[in-house]
Image (cartoon, rainbow, N blue to C red; front, side):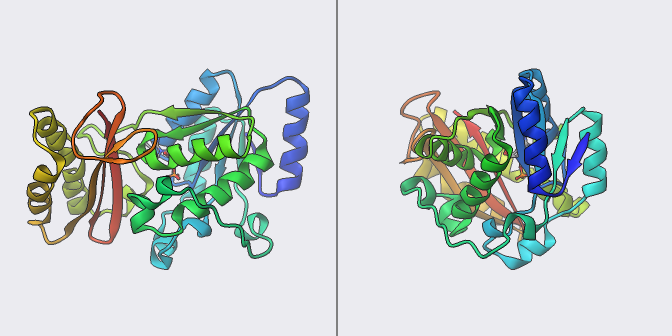
Length: 280
Ligand code: AMP
């Protein structure tokens, strides 16, 4: 695996690969890699792509300085895992390389960006769109792979690609879960063993909500009891439970059209914020 810390040599290297007829597949990450990330790399390899993974903890998408400081960083272990899955290139730039000067560009995705994560993490998606645009321009991939775990992020990047004419095919990849159902996440590494046991409550809540919705209950009838159950434990807090149209993310109270709906949840275990969703 080739490892690049700087843009210029990476670009020169990838342009040669492109000239030689390789399709470039791109998997942007913030590192602290787990099997979920590796499934994206594997999807890219399976699609026949020369695969580039980036690891960059993007300061522009953190609205909470403490969250940025505590975000897990495990680069040596990450390199080992990437070699194991035969990733072709790792790009792991410094913040100075990505942001050599202060950026003023802001992205506004309208209602896609103000709901759910956008409501609770103001500026988050503008920071995501900024770094993803930069990385798309640097890597110039043919294909890019994103996890369904961050459904709203996928929707927004899809919009970004269409709006800015990026010539990139996006691939949403299903969420990988631990055996008990907890969605794999770099942030799980921050949980104590006891907290790890409690974190499953969010996925269980999604399943309970799904079953009650299919029995005909409305989301606004279900949410208070789920919130109550979660928050019986002083260390747990529900931030939102939202049913939305998969494409435009408009809020729903019941599953009007099967296969076009997503049920999303966000909450805290201690000071660790977790998100998850299921497609209905
Ligand atoms: P992150 O490093 O958390 O920014 O995630 C990098 C990419 O991996 C994003 O496209 C995520 O949606 C995806 N991802 C994160 N967790 C999972 C998971 N459990 N299963 C599949 N993809 C994931």
